[in-house]
Length: 169
Image 1 (spheres, helix red, strand yellow):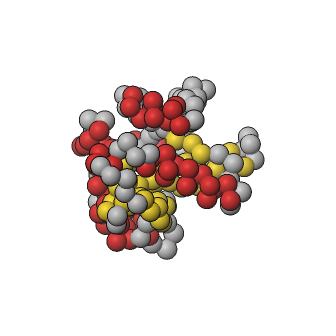
Image 2: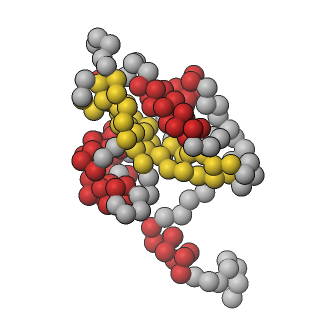
């Protein structure tokens, strides 16, 4: 493929279908397409309403969707500094090898640094070795001092609505 002109811009509500395609692309890459429950309407509602839960950078080459980076602000109480959490980074297979993923992350990091942010954090699926190598190659080292815990669905609702600590009668 020739070297296309790359543009990176903030997503708009009308990008919801491409954002969803990116999420599905990530899920398919790691063999978990059934895990994506989001719809384009969910993306529009959660990302482009009165109180957006996330932001997205869109990468386009010659006005064609090439990739995206979905992120939101976080804060480190130990560092006493704000940062950014990258939830999803996707580059369409047709555009891989053009450093678009790295360019998206560097663009985001520059924006965050300009606003006083001090770090970028992300989690990679434990079986996505290609992505793990990519992040190491571009200078995002793996940390093993944290262990991710998550509760979702009915278990989350039960936890939220039960005031009794575990083991208490």
